[in-house]
Length: 74
Image (cartoon, rainbow, N blue to C red; front, side):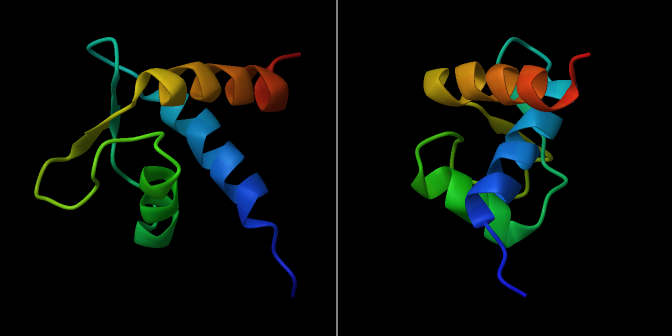
């Protein structure tokens, strides 16, 4: 199966928006491969560590809201 990882990343960012708290933090409940790609794209803080949440960068925050609206708004 040929999987479009960019689409997976967009969906992951949209789902992160659902768990947004403290203005830029989201719960870290996604596959490590996904969070590593998002980190490499500059959308989240380094996912390595014991913290249960991640920090969205300014660009990540904007994109997570944009992808959420694109994928889930009626």
